[in-house]
Length: 410
Ligand code: ADP
Ligand code: ASP
Ligand code: MG
Image 1: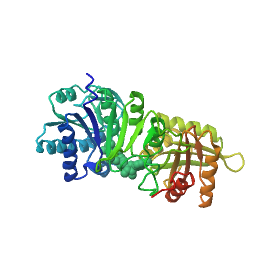
Image 2 (image 1 turned 30 degrees about the horizontal axis):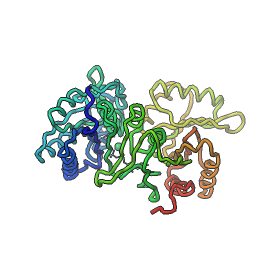
Image 3 (image 1 turned 180 degrees about the horizontal axis):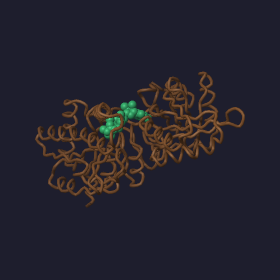
Image 4 (image 1 turned 120 degrees about the horizontal axis):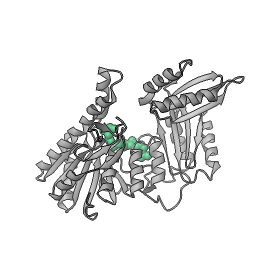
């Protein structure tokens, strides 16, 4: 692809809430045409309207409890097709030329792993041609096509990744992700009212936050941004102010703790009080790996006598396939499933150097009478698992105890 003039090129993505109603679509169209009027080349990536993707998922499950992944991708990609066409129509209505493309037409080439495909290449020649003709190009996010011409999706939240990949392919230095919050906060502002907006965050911290559950960005979009050096500006669809910049350097001052996040979309699968817990854990991990299931937390702990407990956490979405794989490959064990689990993850570059942070975390949880289940830590992330019913209160308490709320919290 020819690199377009980075001075005039802008690549933007609008999320589901921002496109949730016809009025909002018209509002987004007005915002885009202002950019065009200012002389810019505009690529716009769209998500499906509102909760369309959830509805399509549920619709599939009304037909069968385990929809084939290829067909699920066929179904889910329809959501973005609706919003791309409507947005293009709304732009035409304002007197500007626009054209919409599916992921496949935009040259988003992926591998074949349906429902969580990875982008292999961006061959956006048609996008380029249409930009050169002066048109605004609307691209369906979250979808691509495999070399064998199969339609794929990139995983929930994947339009962010489409946006960053296109920005990178055209040599843009930055892309804008427009959403329903005005930036990235120290915790999900819908859950923790004292959360503060972060001005700048490093790629590494954002990857950790997103991977551990902060749905504001698809974690792979940050990974692509990091590797290609594209800055990501997360900002409000409804307001003009600057949001949060994700870049190679975070805020100048190194924070011990940058932010925290929760993940409620998990289940724990365990085998309590078993012989040879380590051997069993290895068998379980192998079964899950063969079934392509992502294990979020593994825990092996002593039980009575020389028995042990083994548990793994996987996403709710993968619960059924995980159980199937475990029952097939480890048929002699009984697995129990706990759906009332959650994790809270605390992220910051200073974590590894400051064991005092973990102490503060344990003390605050104890003050709420919460006994955390397994805790795991890496250099920059501390993950606690606990009961889901305790998680919101724990988030708010930890946010304060770790000094994230600040003095002027409002
Ligand atoms: P979109 O449809 O625009 O992609 P998403 O729902 O995927 O929007 O992401 C925006 C949401 O992410 C917010 O409404 C907010 O509830 C949630 N969120 C989770 N963690 C954070 C965070 N740390 N900062 C801001 N928003 C967050
Ligand atoms: N519509 C898709 C989803 O809901 C992709 C996205 O929003 O980024 O997951
Ligand atoms: Mg999203």
